[in-house]
Length: 97
Image (cartoon, rainbow, N blue to C red; front, side, top):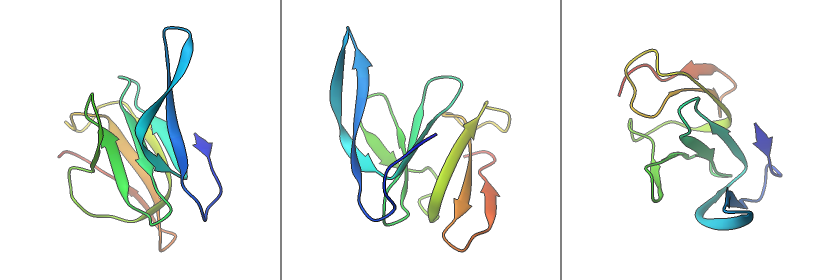
């Protein structure tokens, strides 16, 4: 996991054809699922996933996180199974969509 400062979102870049390409979206933490899907947390605690062309709010439509990690697709989620440290300090795992 890479982490920016907690108070400011940093731009997201992806390595493509020998160059860093800036993508839509910014955040404080990013993690990538084993299948290649990146997940992003911003300074407001919002959780997003990459749909192949842009970051979308997580499939549950809610949640608040300060950190994120993503495991393999064990529970039927389309883009990996993210684990978060919630804004309240608790640990959560998304299981299924």
